[in-house]
Image (tube, rainbow, N blue to C red; front, side):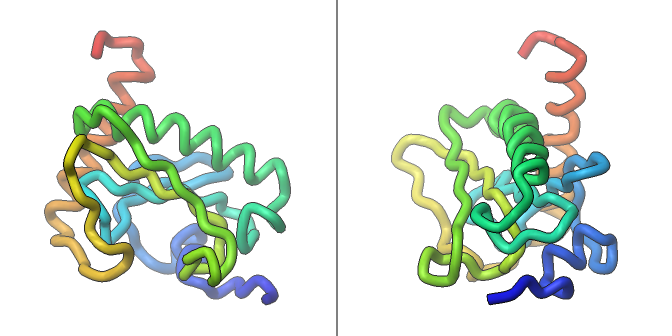
Amino acid sequence: MSYDPNNLFARIGRGDIPCIRVYEDADTLAFMDIMPQADGHTLVIPKRAGENLLDTALSDVMAAMQTTQRVAKAVQHAFNAPGLIISQFNGEAAGQTIFHLHFHIIPAYPASRLQHHARTKADPAKLEQHAASIRMSLQTLSSGSPT
């Protein structure tokens, strides 16, 4: 499969399609998954082209991983989650549905079940609240304030 520069996440990364932003820098973007598996489900993408982990430039993978780690800490803090699921799929056979490299950050709790992937859209107002909580945690954690 060849990379489609008009895939959903490429368009979001360019700003052609709106999203609920959590974090952005020159190389990456983190935003709320509109069909979350759990409250706080956040996605991280590199802004440059790359279909999956195997064909994306290493510098873009590293930038996305750095953002994933930073945002994951904030998601865990914001949702008081004892665990996190960080996932990334490579190819349709592995469950990839949008062919632009992306990482899922999903809060995890004991005895809690995840919603099915990419099935039900969440209320945008609720997603905005979740994003605000994550952004606040990003600020708190970067300022060195106690958690």
